[in-house]
Image (cartoon, rainbow, N blue to C red; front, side):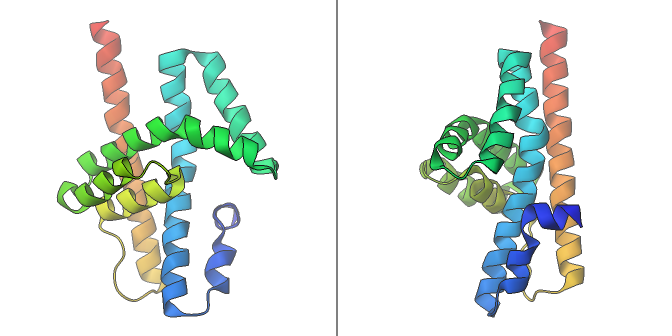
Length: 169
């Protein structure tokens, strides 16, 4: 229930037409991937590269951007998220279906105005091969599991990369 509230599942229920349901569902998938991204990936990346103070500052910025109504915090968060989100999107392409996600990743790299949630949703959905025709609860649950597995595989890749750098350094 918390996950549905946090991800905006109420938007899915308010969609009236089939096209609107598909758009709302794509946004929900993007929010799901962004939620996984902002909870572990950026924090760990900033901790490793810049130190604990930057990781803590990022989490504070995340919390402030969720509470603030102004565009200032969201813009700063967009800038801070730009590089790490593209790194995770590239990881999605590498650990998922590369051939399906190649075009989505190229579009994400070329479109510098796309926010992290939309970019991760597009690349993640392509890498996990979600987006089957017809929307039902069983398909949605299977696709959510596939996206969760994609996040888990990405975490393994980054943990291994960090371990190799620590061993070599």
